[in-house]
Image (tube, rainbow, N blue to C red):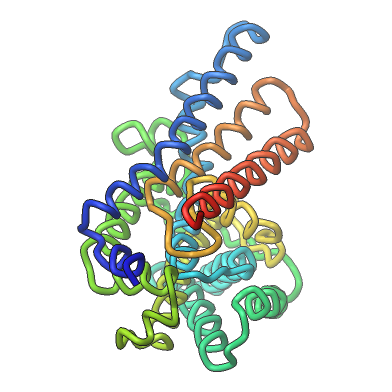
Length: 341
């Protein structure tokens, strides 16, 4: 009960200490990864490009899509859930956005449709988990395939490519662009939007009643129910909020690809979950932070960029990322056992 009480108080010193502690490890890991690739790039390549301003901008653009979707996954994981359908839902949102643009709907309507698709997908997940009382892993494993199928129906089992010169607004094309003329204060506009969303979510989790409920659900759902928290309503709200972030990530995804492909999100849910886990989030629930998630997403983007700069093949990136995920989960389990003991 004491643990739940601490988690229900986002403004408390105990939670601030937990958040700081959970973010310190990922920050050190990020510094080590950056340092390793910077040194390796300086020794192998001439000239070295890893720490160049252009490459850092590219990393920020690559981080944005996964980071925004991972913000929503942070809320789910903190509440004790999981969402394996995030990648398929992201691709579905991007496909709906592309379909609307290709059929000459106004850009504002297309964007609202994409965001609404993400929210609807999250709502469906939340309702099924609450009503059926089936573990989130199983429910979202099923909806992952459902959303993939729906995206294929929308796209006619093909890739939708709107006319960039006539149907896609310039601001949407520039969202993840690293071209100098499209930058806002040195960074892509999408990177700034991701930071704004991150700050908003951090304030929501730490300063609102809803944030207290999210941490309480992940800490001990039975205790939260005894405290009078509406479990159903809050679970649905958690998954809908995550769906909104998935919808925004779908918009970023479309901006990068300039198309809507139903299968383009396959496997992306693993990177989204990995960003939260590497950032210090616990798959057991009750712990996680926005800052840690952003750091985890940055670590993955740095690894991908560093491997590319060194000429390492894509399988090496996958191996390195897999090792980091195992290390992060192992550390979390060790910490859990230490606290329990």
